[in-house]
Length: 61
Image (cartoon, rainbow, N blue to C red; front, side):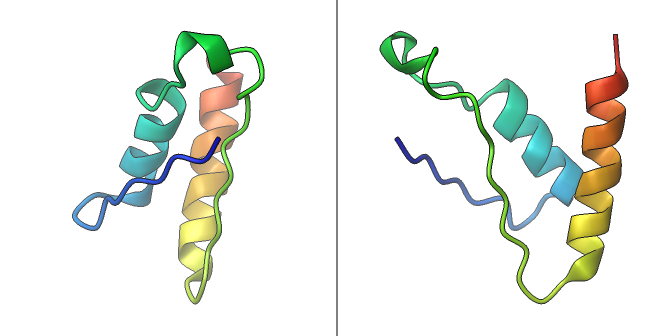
């Protein structure tokens, strides 16, 4: 299953917050859909910002 969204007017952290909290698969796919994939082309800052965001999100209680 592939789900794509566009977030041109949002910060990269806001787009990832959406991806990990709101973009949920239908219940019949919930056990097999457990990954978020990001591709960064042409902007290393997006990668750095996302890596820091995810570190914080994964460390949160």
